[in-house]
Length: 89
Image (cartoon, rainbow, N blue to C red):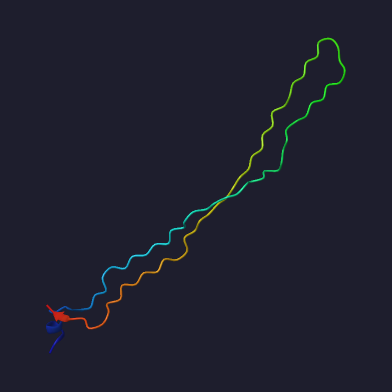
């Protein structure tokens, strides 16, 4: 038999179906975040008389967070099983 004869047929046996997997990261919970304990500016004015003007300051404190919930590796299996029927078309 030549290759032309075998090229006409397709055989299938026990296709496993569809395997799905995911690796969702889930959730992250953060507790209290201490950003340095800044208390702002303190102004003390002693005994004074006349026109006294006191101007406070503006305090800012930036805190950067990098949080990750990586999912890892998802593994799927679509094994065909045993005792499968084979057919040729």
